[in-house]
Length: 152
Image (cartoon, rainbow, N blue to C red):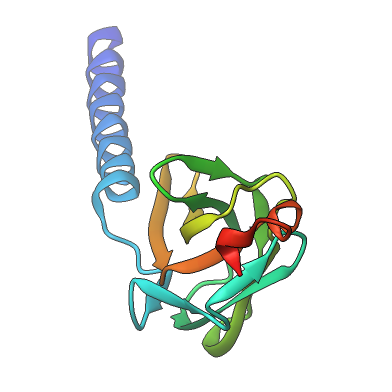
């Protein structure tokens, strides 16, 4: 009698373990579509920005799931100038308009940059879906350099 109970419990444990294996395989391996970007490129609304000015980009995407994103942005010109991570929330559906608004840091040197945005969605406790978007190139002019005659 005791052997029969142990045999049933071992079979149940194996079945339960197999079910857990399938469940975690689904969580890890099945691709999840959170958002579709029309392009992997965003476009700034202007081509020249001054430090301290608000930089805005235009984006076009369709969001399929109601998940909050962690957005990490940085100004890139060979050297990466990282901005603080922020949360982005958009409703499910299509969006076509001004997406990112960031202030150009006062300490950013004059030069040509592009804005790199890394958007990460936490789909479940085991899986993150990440998208990387780059903007077109734009010029940043540091306001302290306005007296420099080479920029006039």
